[in-house]
Image 1 (tube, helix red, strand yellow):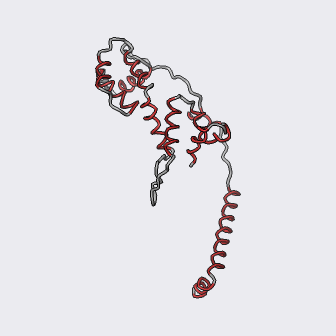
Image 2 (cartoon, rainbow, N blue to C red):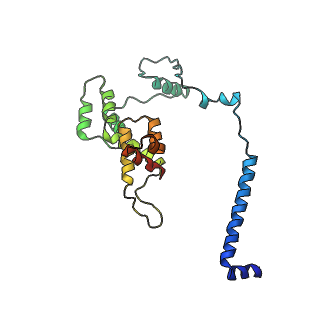
Length: 215
């Protein structure tokens, strides 16, 4: 112990260098041992029968006695589970409730009074479908849905650590995500742009903004 203290005291540079080399050597040996012991697990035929590896398909609708009042396929499955639990569905929500639910779900904002009144007095049989399409076309829909991706990407406009410095141009990436959703950019293109836009579209300034995902 005294000898180690003496070395640290009179030869700090040499001692630090020796410690660095020791760490590198131990790390290299550990990595080599891990690489030698690694064996890739092959998927068996039984593994590939798992539902996650199966192609998408449309399942048959449950057979129900009271199916006349059901409007779509989802209703059949919901009603089937309710019947199995001896439960009855609640009555249909009124239009004021429907527009509030839709608006909050799709845009994150409550509906305006004029929108509520207009929907309540819309006599067209497809008034609900029209409301859905109108909310999907709203710029607030893209803003709302972009929040989910930005949370996954851990987006922030400040560093959030130590001095919490402001990231001056972070908003450009946020706006790019919103615009991508608003323009219905296909999901595969959405991912590729954020990972390799500099290689795929090097002349496109928007592509460089998408790469901020990697920062």
